[in-house]
Image 1 (spheres, rainbow, N blue to C red):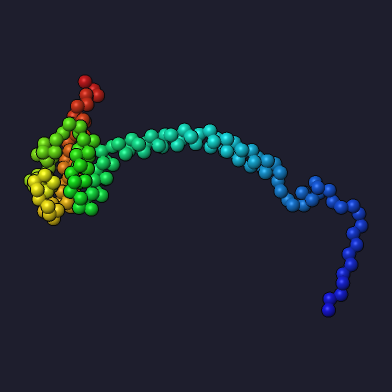
Image 2 (image 1 turned 45 degrees about the vertical axis):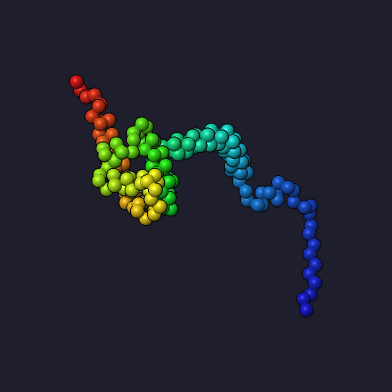
Length: 168
């Protein structure tokens, strides 16, 4: 059994300032932190919409680019959808070089395997062939990747060759 304890306090209760001093908070640092937080909130609210617009514009530019169209072509290739592959190929080709035809691209930057894969794809779609197994989708995609590298390498080389000399 515990005996009851009786406490007696002599004097007045501590003031609010004394109680806050006992906590040990540096009030100047806390005020500076709150001011910094307020400034940060103000800047975020002011600059966040502009940053969002800028990033949204960059995403739209990226999605309208050639690299995005080529990446999107991978989905129909995996699904073995001949119609989607053909239309995706044409969309990518238009972004790569507007006005270029599929046959001229295959002739200029591809090889015989790419030409035969494109012929198989065309005959599958428009020649009455019903078996999608006649088209080597993965081989076509690999041929397109190689031709894309050749195209980009040639275009970059041509662009660098057209630069005037710095010291005439």
